[in-house]
Image (tube, rainbow, N blue to C red):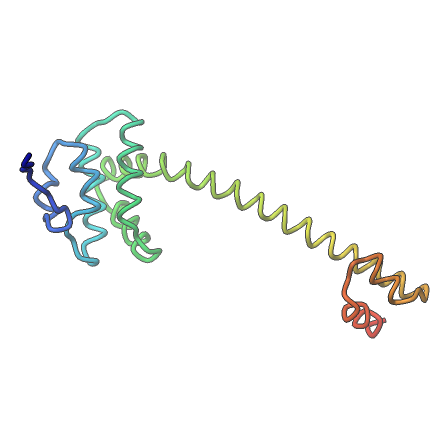
Length: 168
């Protein structure tokens, strides 16, 4: 058997050749096409303009935007420039692009906030326990309990107990 097929190397394709396409897959694949780093913001703007023109339902729009965003990452400075350029577009176009962006970014932000809260609570609990143990160790020192017993009860290392004793 002999298979003959065409291969398309997206990174060798110029993204500008596809921005007028009415194909949602072409929109998603813009992120993998040939562009240089100075064109990233322009590619992202073209992508969102394509999404607007395609008038997809929210689910497809979100899926394609998520794919695109996975492969074309803007750093913080580029993201700010992109947002400034979107805000400077005609009010109708800029608002629609912001609406698309916020729907999928909002989900990511919400997940990030949830994880941040969880980690914050965990760290807060750890610090609270640590402070409580230190407080108990200080009280034990003030009652002249043997340092070995304080180490055994609190689980603190002897060096820490010695440091606490010096503070008193």
